[in-house]
Length: 439
Image (cartoon, rainbow, N blue to C red):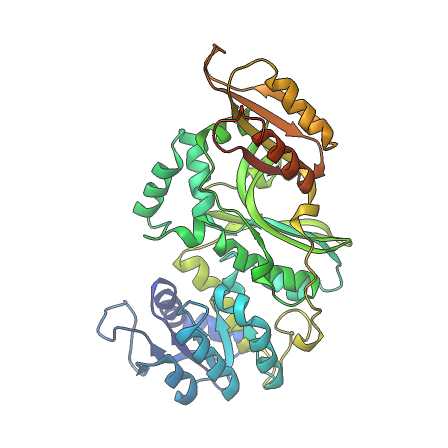
């Protein structure tokens, strides 16, 4: 039997502790499956005295992750610290430079430094695995890097943040406000005390940037993603969407266009009868569209200690089964030096349907004015309806809902801007894109 694969784990939070516990409890089964033992021989975390429910016999403790990466008797460095810079970046770089394999769940690190770290891994002929960085327990990274090699991808989209999906699901099912649902998500541990990274779409953007590189063979460009969060979604939007046959989801979307690659994260209306509309709560879903396969939708748990630990464990066992000294799969789907420069397609050129909600003063000519502004910008309307709970009355604000056929983003923005200048609009208009999945 081959020598044991020695693991060093940096970070013993929920995921790290779960991982060590699983490796210890299932040591015999993993040895049989991988053809060699897998042993945790070193760990590092902030508090050495905390009881994490794991056995520490034979495990070396390091106070500094970089020191563990540089000096510990390990073959694989597992980074579960988090963050794009600081200890995570320094220790992963040190581990790869030393010639260790690396497993990480850190999407922020990869979205910022992924290409550079991939080059180091490939120069050292070492594996850099990161299944847990995107969509938790869904094996989308392995699918893109290995299973669907040879496919030409046209679009990737999905629900990649469980916090946002949970909030939108509760708003629809229970008629609660965004603020109330956020408080409940925080109470249950689905949202952080400072939830801005999730609800403003940044978490989804980091994940999308990695999938974009794997699918389209371009350099990672997280800072080129059009970004909208869900903080402006009201219960009125939820109800109006349902009345029109849609459900609102926060989607990350990347697709090839004639002008380049479009990456966007924003609230999206999807048809109620589509598969992705049925993905509720903290569950994630990622859809891949390609020329050979067509569409593949992958659904599963996107977060949590066990789901993330399962993905990390899968990456470790892949290393345990690999040939000594071999780098079997390019880190980012193709050798890092062959990645193409990212060519951004401007969001103003995006073409699709739109939901537009306007609160207006109840006065003669408003409907005609709105229709005129749309026609001036060659926007075809699927429907335009008054959507107010109370009957029209002089002086009472009214809500008008418009649904467009496929049109250009720039045209919608111009038309809405012209409507704002007419003087009858109350508050800011709401504009939500409509995505019509194939499945």
